[in-house]
Amino acid sequence: MSGLFDLHGRLAVVTGARRGIGRAMAEALAGAGADIIGVSATLRDDDEVASSVRRLGRSFDGHAVDFADRGAVLALGDELAERAPDILVNNAGTIERAPAAQHPLQWWDRVLEVNLSSQFALTQVLSQPMLARGSGKIVFTASMLSFQGGINVPGYTAAKSGIAGLTRALANEWAGQGVNVNAIAPGYIATDNTEALRADPERSRSILDRIPAGRWGRADDLAGAVVFLCSAASDYVSGAILAVDGGWLGR
Image (tube, rainbow, N blue to C red; front, side, top):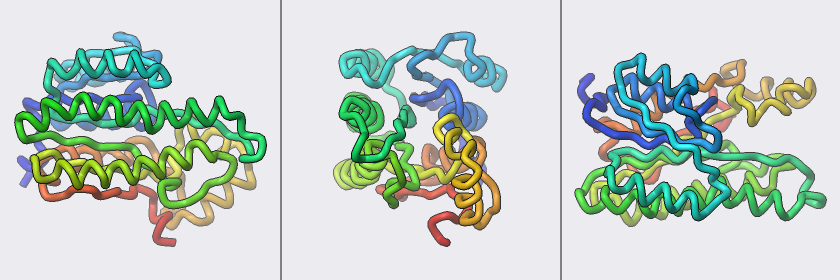
């Protein structure tokens, strides 16, 4: 059974890999045996994620790319497609908070570009070698706001709702060609993206009161889910959005 989760010999691209959920995912995949290509806007070769992956005995190749820059994303895709990665984890993301009536359109545009449009652009390029050989694993990072509306984050909610639809659309096209497309929807995880919520005593308490697990999630709570969706254990799983939320959606 353990062989189902073995990723030795696999090459994984993880975006947003420098910290938080992306770092935890990169480390989890490396722990299962995968070599890692990490991508983030400010990633350096001596970042902690690079060191931790290498301590696990796997290779790490870092790329600094701003996902708001479509041209840079497409250039990265062309470069990485030549290496024909086995796994793509689309985790890069950003968030802007302001009431919808006052939400600047430039914030909207940037959040949609980073969280949705560039995700599709990179996936479109890196899917080509996967489809050509008839195998591959693609995982998007969705959100609780793929299912709910949120407060003061209209661009983020729209993008994450779009990720849920994109996951299903690509799965419909590619499952029969050996490429599994799924998503993980993290619950309320203690990362930079949720710092403002955790700093607000009222909002933090209202969130914790609804989580059956009784705590904020940790980035490493996503480790098992990403290994599952990137391994042979999920070969008949396609178009799924796996909530890792401490029971939030079941409340």
